[in-house]
Amino acid sequence: MTGVGERGAGRVQVVVDESACLDDAVARRHGITVVPLGLDEVDGEQTTSAIGPLTLCAAYARALERGGDAGVVALHLGKGLSATWSNAMTAAAVLERVTVVDSTMVGAGMGAAAIAAAEKAAEGADLEECVAAAEGVLARNRLWLYVPKLEPLRRGGRISTGQAVLSTALAIKPIVGIQDGALGLVAKCRTEAKVLDKLVDFAATEAAGRPAHVMLQHSGADERVEELHAMLSLALPEGSTFDVVDLPAAIAAHTGPRAFAVGMVVAEDEAEGADADAGAIDDGDDAPLPPASVVGRDASPLFTSVAAKLPTWSENRRAAIEKAEALAHAIAELARRDNSDPEGAAFGRDAREEAAQKAADKVGDQAGDKKSDETTVRANERDDDVSAASADDGDADSCGDGDGWDVVKQ
Image (cartoon, rainbow, N blue to C red; front, side):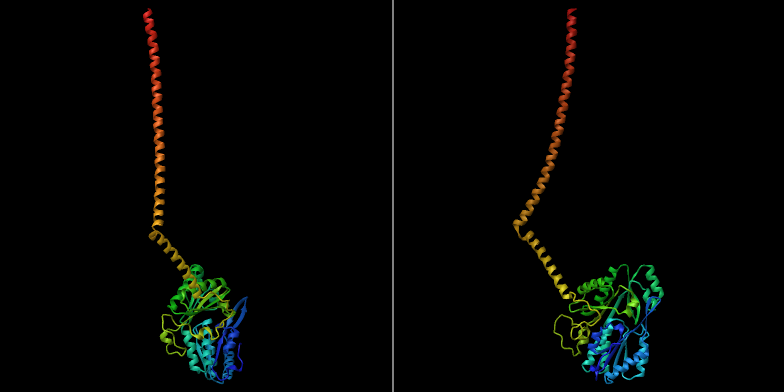
């Protein structure tokens, strides 16, 4: 169990479980207690178990002691996903000033909500204000998960047998989302490429022009996550931020290897943030940036195994704009030469006319050669006929003359 020292005295404490994907160092920095989930191995396969009420009660009691009984905000797996929530309610009933928030969620979005509550507590907020901060982030949190095979989720009771069998039989690539606090199929794709397109479409539609903090979570799917980051960088508005998160073993046991997910917390609307004390937003067309509670005050990585810095959306957009401007300039230059440069236009027309004339001359020459050949053949045939006729006449005269002389002699 990850805990904190005495630095949290006199303030509200935050307790989460391992499914929040919080790095130990980040949890200590924000004074957040992380309770591990049960992870066992049965017949060579990993299984998980809910956190028991006694373990949770002990964690809450220690947090209350550290915070001087200011209160505890408890964030755990949604009640539709695990028995941990009901065990947390049982533990909280034994103590005072412990509020268990139904996250209806799993993953890094819950970690972002925990950080929001912890930062509010650091400002001196009371228990109700810290709970409201966590609930505000959870209300704007979305999650879409791709699992290559649904069998691990079926085995853990997270989806029905019928859904798993149908997906396997039809070779469907399923995208799972949170529906009414429980996992359910939200899209069926034929290829992983279509899965990426669908995830980007979901995220862009949900953002609706507002920047968002995106948490790319995965279990050994680094290449797909890189592709997703590049695609989302272009699809989401400027000001969006990204984190890459390794799913903890307790979650990966249910998703299986090579699973990946898009979690996102969309920035508040301007109307919603008008009453907030985070500072005024400059007039203009730009949407507000994600709240500080999402990205962390010190701009440090919030989650487990954050990848090295990847190109931001603005950098990708700048490169795309430069390429588009270069292409537009080239097209404009060609148009100018065709329409505004008489010499160039005339040269182009002369060249085309010359080529056409050469082609016509070539055809004419071929036709003339053919006609000449035919004339020669006909002349030769006439000469042959004349020669043949002359030969026949010669033969006739010779015979007649001979006969005549013979007659005369007689």
